[in-house]
Amino acid sequence: MSTNIIRGVHPTRMELILLQRRRILAEKGHNLLKEKRDALIMEFFSTLEDIRKLREDVNSSLREAFKALLETKMILGPAKLNELSINLPHSVQTDVDTRNIMGVKVPILRAKEETQKESIPYNVIDTTAKMDETVDKFQQAIKVIVRLAETETAVRKLAEEIDKTKRRVNALKYIVIPRIENTIRYIQFHLEEVAREDFFRLKRIKATLERREQTSS
Image (tube, rainbow, N blue to C red; front, side, top):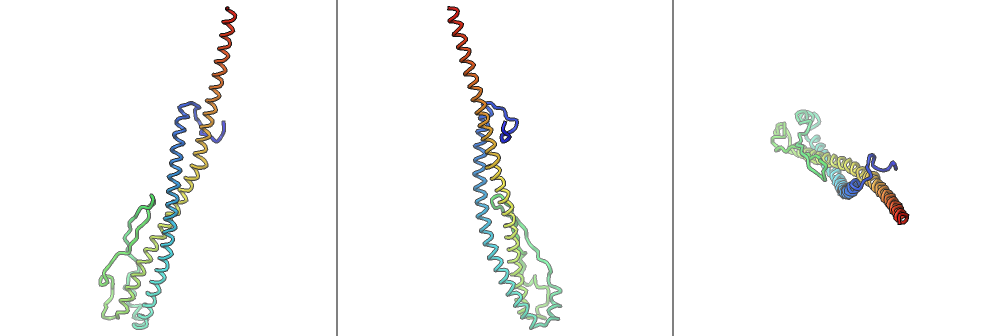
């Protein structure tokens, strides 16, 4: 028996019918997985393009924020700016959710929205409008950075799912379906051999009976 067939199979007509149905299901599964793989790849490259744009936005927003920071430093002086920065938050609160892309769960990250009055932990009387502008620009930059982190995570998860789907497609194409087809051919060959043996056996029995009839007559 070939090693490239399903082990423990019984060469019967019922097994042959079951395997033929199984092959149809495997081929349908293979086609569906190919479609999923192709859709994931399209989504992957679309998201990569989003990353490129977001990185440009991050660079642009950070340039504006640091430019405003430099101007604020020139107005208030380094000592005053350092004093004010102590009270500023050193972390970002984010809302986390998930969305589904072709069966892949990817995160949705959003920096928590706050009104400007709530988010400024210093006395505005002691500063200038440029300080408020600087804080606002860094808050906007943070939002874009969080969006970039979300998109980069989505790309990583899509890449992992594409790799997994490719392996399943290849396993069906090169292992599962060929093994089913080889097993079908093996059973068909066995059944044909049995049919030939039965045919020749019946032919010999018929010839024997005919000789007996001729002898008795």
